[in-house]
Image (cartoon, rainbow, N blue to C red; front, side, top):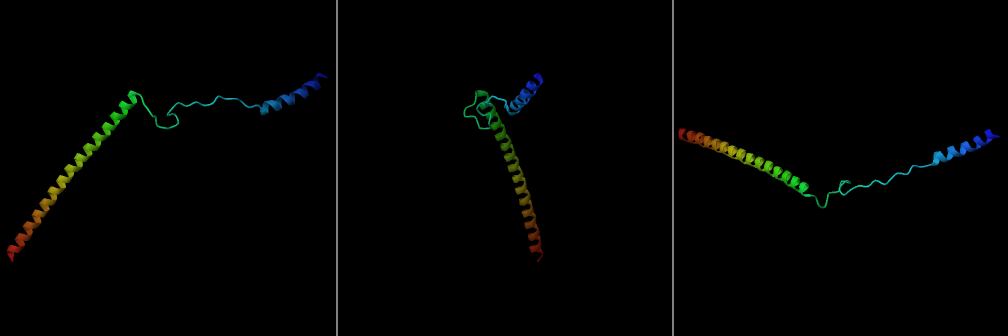
Length: 96
């Protein structure tokens, strides 16, 4: 008799264990955790962003100065070539 009782109870407990779901807590995220930009940052964040922006502006300024220097060098080279062409054409005109 005991045997029949245990076999009758066992399938019922297995069935409820198979359909039982586990409860989990909801995931809570702070502002900015989802990738959204923060609306207001602390002083350290603002200072860090200002320092990064300043460094980027300095690098861009250096690049601009290098480009201007290269432009001056190219312009001087073009002037030399123009002078050389003028000298050649004068010599050619004088020979005629």
